[in-house]
Length: 159
Image 1 (cartoon, rainbow, N blue to C red):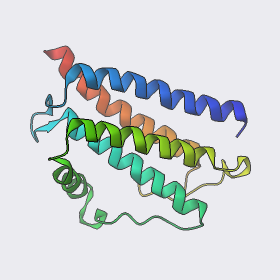
Image 2 (cartoon, rainbow, N blue to C red):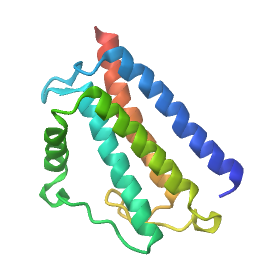
Image 3 (cartoon, rainbow, N blue to C red):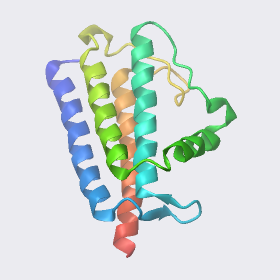
Image 4 (cartoon, one colour):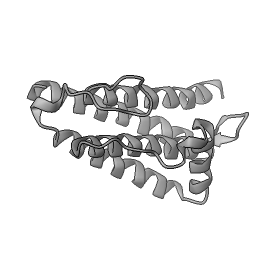
C-alpha cells in the first residue's frame, strides 16, 4: 500500500471518528438506542471499542503469524456482546470514551507498523469466511461504526 493510500485510510478513520464523536456527544450517554434491549449510547460506544480491540488483537496476532482466538465467543455473538455490555455497565462515560480513543490510537499504530509489502497479505478474522487484507479489516470496522452511529443519529432525528 502506498504512503498516500495509507494516509487516506487513516484520514478516513479520523473523519468517521470526528463525526461519531459529535453525534455521541449530542445524544448523551444515557440515550436509549435499542428499545428492545435497553442498549444506550454508552453501551454502543463500549461495544465499538470491544470490536476495535478484537481488530487490534487480530492484527497483532497476524503480525506474529498467529490467529487470534476470541475468548468467550464460543457462546455466540449475542452472548459475547451482552457479556461485554455487562462488564462495562458500571463504567463512566468518561472511561468508555477514553477507552474508545485509546484503542483507536493503538489500532492506528498497529496499522502504521504493517510493512508496505504486507498490506495485501490476507489475515484470518473471526467475521470473514476467507482471510482479508488489513485494509479490508479497517473498512469493515468503519462500516460497523457507521452502522451504530447511524442508529444513534436516527434516535436523535426521531426525537
